Image (cartoon, rainbow, N blue to C red; front, side, top):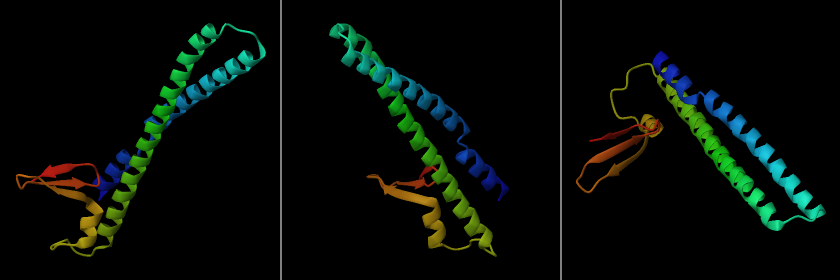
Length: 136
């Protein structure tokens, strides 16, 4: 049971993801403000538009890349939290049992197995909720 708690802690640890998320979000906010200021300045002053776009486009691309990375990191964070919930539910179910599992149990099956794929050659690929796969 302690191994499950350790695995749950490792899989749900979002410290590194949160740190990178903060860094990338801060960068995104700074670049967004720079873009906003550029547009405001461009609307108030006469500027060479080729120069404006030459400066604007790389910043806009940087903002888009940061936004895409933010979305990736948020998805990673969500995935880690979902894994922790799945492990927690499994641990609770196992803790509630008085005896060892000696026969098929639907509830445990659905808590651990995400899907089973039957390949053309008849082999089965079990995909577990923890991300692990086993081919039989």
